[in-house]
Length: 388
Ligand code: KIV
Ligand code: ZN
Image (cartoon, rainbow, N blue to C red; front, side):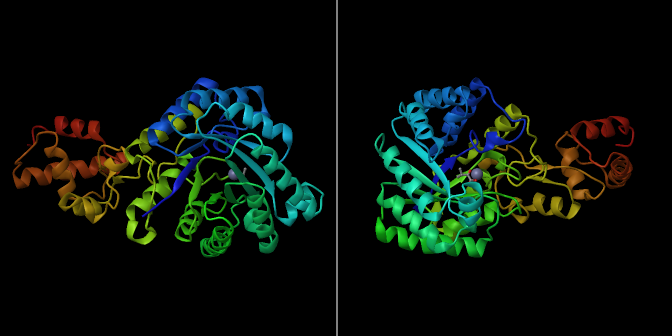
């Protein structure tokens, strides 16, 4: 099975979310948790953006640089590159991450330059970064909206200048899975012909909800590394959610023939930590880390689950650090689920006619309350103890 590298950018792209600013201690807490999760690379920030960000990247490199590769983001300008180098140099494996656009809209409108000028800037930036350390990642910003031949010309030139990782961003969530997979397949074929040690990476945004699908399509088509964030936080609609891709791979190993080093039982607690420290609630129905991701409320589903968990549950909640499959009782819950719930409170062997009465009391309460939790059941049993 191919081992896919996981590059976590919760502390850089994730921290770009409005209002999600972290102080240095909170960043260290998250970095510590990312180490427990066993990510391969931590993008700890954008060091030239502020002295605080520089200090955070530097401290993370000093504290955790023996456990994961540490990087920071730089534009293709010397001062940014130097700043990344000065902050990540304490890590055992430091990485400089350079970003420069390749789409027409970036070249013409954002930079007001020619394609050749942008290409030269990229090559010079990589050479400058290589004068400090061996590992340099080059991101062709807005790659999915770039003309393929110019994108390839850039990739080939920066590899020849010494880039060791090529990252293909779908910066505005424009890509669709089949097309993005095909782009990665073509690039991978050409890159490995130039230098088979170069790592091909993807970085997807979620503007139309396709970040996970695009990332998985890229893995299927040869990507060696993925960039993602916890809970999918990031610019606008966010980035690829780490937990979704990891569990997608784990669920279908025969399809992807790929896995990662992630310790999946750390997923839920990492999600809770990031959400709590950043003040960003996780949508309740969010795949893998939402509160309802493993909760079942319909009677048909609850009945099936009580017979065998795998009837409606493809991922074992314990695999992601969620301890119990939760059956939320509602008016749609069947007799089987209700019986199971009262048995968990020690109410066993209730005669059939008494059970019928209790069940109808439960349905009355469920109609009013909509969802019946543990404390509601206790109340129901106490109030109707005379029945049973
Ligand atoms: O979305 C993007 O293009 C980025 C790059 C810095 C990789 O965040
Ligand atoms: Zn991004």
